[in-house]
Length: 551
Ligand SMILES: NC(=O)c1ccc[n+]([C@@H]2O[C@H](COP(=O)([O-])OP(=O)(O)OC[C@H]3O[C@@H](n4cnc5c(N)ncnc54)[C@H](O)[C@@H]3O)[C@@H](O)[C@H]2O)c1
Image 1 (cartoon, rainbow, N blue to C red):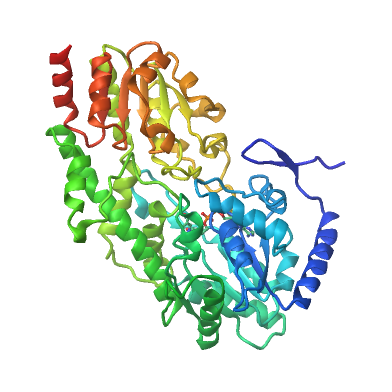
Image 2 (cartoon, rainbow, N blue to C red; image 1 turned 180 degrees about the horizontal axis):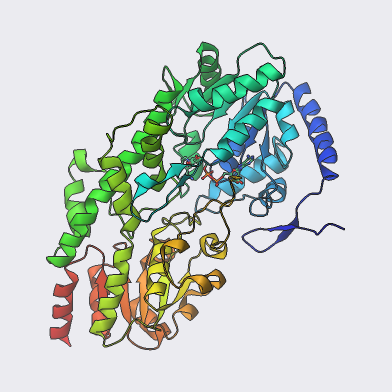
């Protein structure tokens, strides 16, 4: 008898992975649904990969209406039944979002489409592709780094994406349009995906060319999650005139292109390059502030106030403080995909890229500095870092989301652990921190257990596999020697120093990595006998002296 395998949702609910017998039943269910939907004149859209992007994009498409206000699309969210991700399907089919965010519209939108409008369902079978008029590809394409702080030794993980494109070509009707939304190495749509699909079409006896297009996502999972997909400018292109026309028509039907006009570029490589440049630009301005952050710490400057002063100038308004490193799925990898494509897709041998990889390397290692700040703060309090209990507040890569991929916080935990500290972690949005839970899982080239964990770059990491997230913030503070404010989650912004010190039970070190504390809070911590340090916050020393004089 074969063993039952489960997939566990972030809330801990277990779902049995479907066995071979269930595929036939599932396809029959989809066929019945699709027949009914076609009778109502709806187009069938299959979204492959219902992760952070795909789940919400699927709902946005399912919620769209035609000119008469009637739903024009029926959406099937398709997700592989892997142990890590299968749970997303049963959750979606209950009308529940498989992603957590601060945007209340995510839950409402998914519930409305699944339960009321009945324009959205989710499935685990690739047979869904056979029913598609449009396929939207939202799977991931990772960039695998070999070294910490040297992205040039890494490579794009094309295996999963290539396999997805092959599966799609094997199953779709010849006329279906395939829209790649995945961020890919520039050149992928035309030089990798198209040839794969074309060859499979030929084997299937299909004479027409695949209708293949590219349009990248600019989604920001956070307070404006849904509108960052629906009400935002898009760029697209197709491999030929038909594909360009079809993709523009589709995006105009499902997104608010009236208020946010669509840009149609000549070739997919231009749309792909636009995405990589956008994110490399962002990564670069963040990396640029790393050296000024150190300058500020060492010379009595509060970088927070300096940035606010500079930003008043409209040409400089998008300058932001980098926090403890730049995480999230996109900024740490996208520039790498571009650098890799130059050699490995386009065949150039010289190294033209300097700034793009350097920015990623700086961002990838910025969090290591937190180890120094914690060490120094504890030393000022006469405490060693070894065996010190330390609470890290925030595991995700940015405020108000539960996405931990490549977060600076992971590096903080790993560095401090290597230095001998005992770490506790609290994050209101993260129940299981996968980069630790799965840190010993080998890279499976199936696109799922991506090697997000950075365990292999550090010593003494083994026991972190058992790292459990703290549930109660105040309780988790009890007895710690240091608290690290790692992420600007709403819950962490206005913490009262008196309450914090009371919860800890004694004065402790406070390390502010994200300009969370205002000057009054910093002074109060000093008055209470705490030590405070902060990334880019050199003025803290001044506040300390003021507080001392007051005492
Ligand atoms: N997360 C963001 O903020 C963001 C923003 C803009 C662009 N993007 C890009 O969008 C793409 C998707 O990112 P994401 O954050 O949604 O990733 P994700 O990991 O959350 O989601 C990808 C999903 O695809 C599934 N999947 C992988 N291979 C599959 C296959 N062969 N068949 C079916 N399902 C498969 C995975 O299990 C996962 O659920 C990436 O290229 C990313 O760079 C992401």
